[in-house]
Image (tube, rainbow over all chains, first blue to last red; front, side):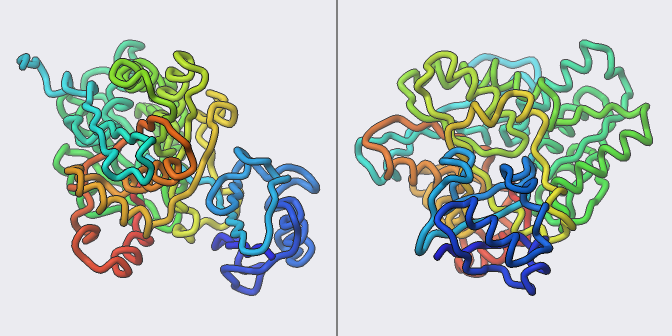
Length: 90
Length: 315
């Protein structure tokens, strides 16, 4: 089962947890699981059933899923999913 | 060596050095373009010069003009250097949690610092700059995150220089901050050879800046979307602080004293080298290590430095 690292802004919805163990075989499954398990996250990650919001980055083992298979990217035992707000630099 | 009329003429034309001694794969070369050689000490000299010269050409900047910009450091420093030489006054909205040296350098060049909450990171600094620019229409706001001159500096400078020095490259790997380097040089290189892969590296900053109240305070630079960044990039990855510091240290083995973001880019290049059969990777060393001495990155225990790095913005 994949582990999900939550950004600080979402932790309050998960009782303060920084990492939660989710269920699912794809990133889309993981997001659905998060939205169902922690209703406060619904709408924050994506429009219902849609792609992740533009300002949200989802990484599987540190790779942005937009450049893998998007929300269809496979996850499994030992996979780490990281969710972060997009942040500028410079 | 030629005699240059101005230190600003030294911007660009940076050297590329072979750092393949650090490659885990003998069939993958890793080359590093040393942007710390720019007179202001970072790759940001290029964008700053282009943005200022364009604003001078279109008449927005005139002698005595006041500029406002947000920066986590390097763009501010580069703009401040040029402003001092050209006689402009610069105000920089700077997150409070950058290394002390970044602040000191802004002071060297005479910039006025407007602090913004560290927990909001660069996104918060940018929002504040937008507000201030709105309240003061008489100030010139170049806005590095949306200014096409930023990407143009790399389309006309960094990209052609890489192509001139290393036409055999297979991958271009650079940091994603404003996206200027990747959008400009990345596009130029793909136009020369469509097979060139463009990889972006970013730090997991969102994990460190805990002052963002909502996910929708996340920000993708207009420069990235306006240049079809989602299509241009082939891969984007985060590199965590510990690995960034480890590779910042490893770079000294080949004589390269770099900033921490360059260590992150090097870590990504090493990951790429492991995945590929063969290739030539060109990476960017964004700045030298001078501005990060206070972090103890090379000398203190790794755990201690990692904890410290999580508290500062180094991209």
